Image 1: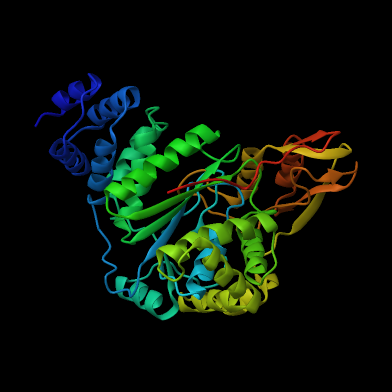
Image 2: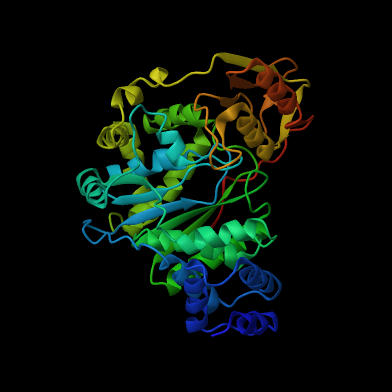
Length: 434
């Protein structure tokens, strides 16, 4: 085969065959196809698109470009969850142990944060000694023993996707639906689970800013999963404001613990129960989402979910005392309240800006090698639709640097908008795609 011929074929709107896609991905992963030719192919795909079959074959080729995890040693139907990323999104910290507490085998590969969205691995490393570097044997043992294990993605998991994403990021070819969907799903398929529940974010703090694009992405990923023989459901959830009130690694861990103890913010609890209900049904533990939700609510109320969380932390080398007493986790030197400049209702929160403030304080990575300050971040005191008087706190900033604290205060003042009338607030769960 000849790469130039394939570029011309796609440029003219023709579909690539299975063997052509497989050849292209293999040769690019092995370094035999240069970046400039693959860049031309990515741009051609951006202009003319891909069919469902092409997208599925691209996904499978990327998934099979490296290690394919064999989870056959785990009993039961393995269920994974993936979020497209958002601000204050600590969902996995609550959802994974909650689902495990009712018997769902949760074998999860998670990533680190990059940019204004946080990563599950970074948050878990707030616990002293916690490790996500598990051997395959230990990973399988932990899921069989505790119904839960969370590990970092290995370098050999979907290496073609890593190369392609790095290329797309610098060639203006990121925002194409088939390429986004195949990137996400290739990692999920390589991770070895039988079923997948997707949390597709939409709104100011999400990659998909509007509902139309979020729905299209969700439908694309569900189709890929179905064609690849996996049971996939996508939940589209709102990210026009941060999830919960905490933004920042340790702050989000503390909020997750509160939720696991049967408390916590209503929106985080609702999202976790919705996603968890579909996971529980897919695992064959409940016959419908309503029945599953009752099981999950009971586990939150009777403390079983929190108990599993502590066992999970201990099993991966962390200190469960820090879960029992989250005040032992790292704390920032300075905590400053930011007062409201106006009276009325909070009409809008620039969610992406909130994420950038946390990043600026040191709570996220500007590059892959950046060191994270786990203790910094923000706690919102008001959310969309809440009344506020002038001078009342909008948020608390947690910082370790006085200069950065001042910058954060100025940025935060521009992140809130106000109105005299109470605004309508979008529902948290926007759609379910099956």
